[in-house]
Length: 78
Image (cartoon, rainbow, N blue to C red; front, side, top):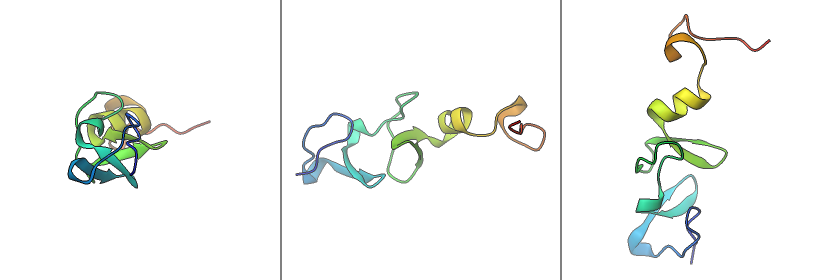
């Protein structure tokens, strides 16, 4: 029986949600930053942890700078 990566309890077939190559309980599949419940395939992943696409993933790991997007906002690493 697979174990949920969030709570480490067994995931039964009736309550299973598969995402990021793992089986989760539906309430355990949440954004690591804001806690919003996510649905499979509609979120982003960083270091094996789920994040909602907008705004959490893009704000933390997307281009940095004014406006968080667009041509004027990207900063280059020096």
